[in-house]
Image 1 (spheres, rainbow, N blue to C red):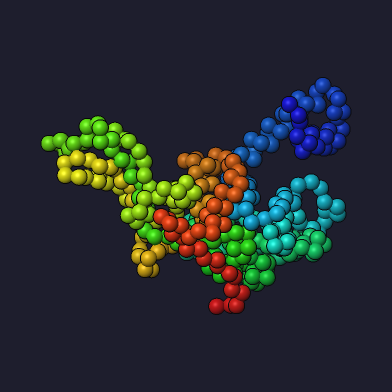
Image 2 (spheres, one colour):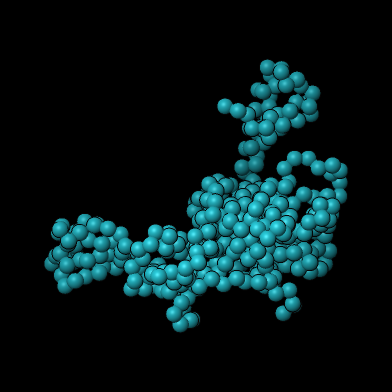
Length: 340
């Protein structure tokens, strides 16, 4: 098994700082003890775990959206000089050749409508200094964890707040540039249905005690009353059902007289606001739900990263068809820098 070069570099740095030969048989033993203590301390720090999880989630989100040429962790390794500069988390080269440096921050406030974050002026100034030296625009990837919502803003959107700089979630949403990395707001026709179909060759009658035992013959997906047969549309519908913002109801029986035809789950918007279609959410918020399923548990953060799913949303984003059974409405939200 090959040793990752980053891990070896950490070992080499440890040897230099502790003035111990890397070939000393005790070096590895002392290093492992040191690392064990450091990891135990880190795992006990909720702020660190949530911050690292959010940083990894942003990387995975961009990879899933697929609207980039290169995504690189920028803050790995040393920087010289190390005074006056702060290295952002990522460098992104988008498909249109534009290039950004992105610093990712996790923001959480239990109070739903008190969502504001503040930065010290020196923190932003050091990030800007690095970005200027690299001749690359700086963006702030802000994850509003209470709402599972991503925004991507420029430092110019921050406002003076005493000796700090701040921004609230509503302002961040108005000026967000998430569309540049491929984020979309999606609409489709309600309801979405998941139907477990009963086997007609097996018992499925409703008894006098209102019970029906049945054998599942198949699983079908519907948009409205139309069955979804295309494999890509099925994949999209399943993403919507798991991570979209419509409410789930069911299970409900589908009867034909005294015979059970199917057991059905149904997803509907909380409130009907349009004719023919309803919004089901943004891709980034759906991905936040997926990522939470992989990394959060009853005790909080249980993993700081989930398995990458390259181009997860690409069939949805780049499909030229509006869908025969699953019609889609795609909305690209552009930033509005004008102050409300």
